[in-house]
Length: 74
Image: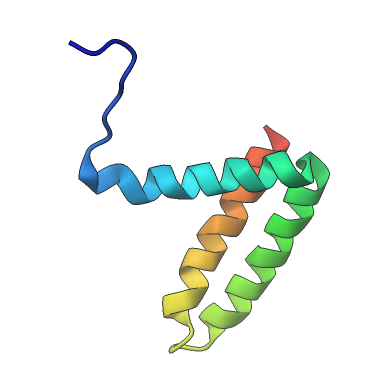
């Protein structure tokens, strides 16, 4: 039996990867820059979402921007 190993279900792997990306960006840029970058991603995601075809790309950008803002503030 291995001690200290955690397995993540395959269904949740994309969320784990996204959160690891967010924490990596936060570690590199700092809290304030992460909030500014998150706000910029929210605006870009919103602009993409206003076009129907761009919603496929815009909604994930919105989610990443929101996650960066939350991670930067708390």
